[in-house]
Length: 250
Ligand SMILES: [Zn+2]
Image (cartoon, rainbow, N blue to C red; front, top):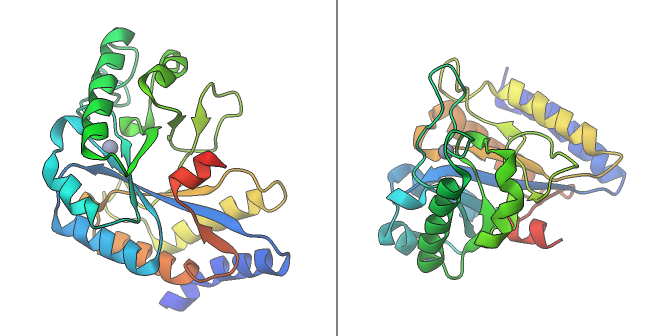
């Protein structure tokens, strides 16, 4: 399958949106940043050139001035709180969680408060008041308590629950294959998933579509998908790549 054939289903669906006078909102979340690296430069360059806003989920316990200095010259980037130290506190037989019910809520909330303090000090201009839980999981009992920490939104994975006690800005398409190859997923599979997400929104125009990346572990397949996606969409009239701040304010 050639590159162009791979993207045909997405183009067709976007053309259908355009013909109907609709626009789809996309947003991009990339996780686990702590310091400047070559893959981060690549991500910033790719998104900056395409004019696509990026939200970086930053791990506060292990980040510092160096990343803040690098991001200061990347005005298309916003920073969100990625837990505290990205440490798993779940048992061996459970899915990984840092913010689960394994520890007292006041302890977990204290870490998040410290994390927000660090990011607020480093990112006075670029911080969005949103929590991205490590592994996209969090103890539900904590949700009503997040606003007291200055966190007004949560970003996890999958369609947003309508009964959430906090604003949700979720991701829906994860470019990585975490349980198999641990590399980028096949492009045709990702395109099919994107088309399904678009089709589900054609009538009700619900939540934006979030793309999830992890720059530190991308292989060539993952990078090629991301650059292909930006190529295909950044100037398509039916797509608006939108910043997390704008989506949360609207
Ligand atoms: Zn993470």
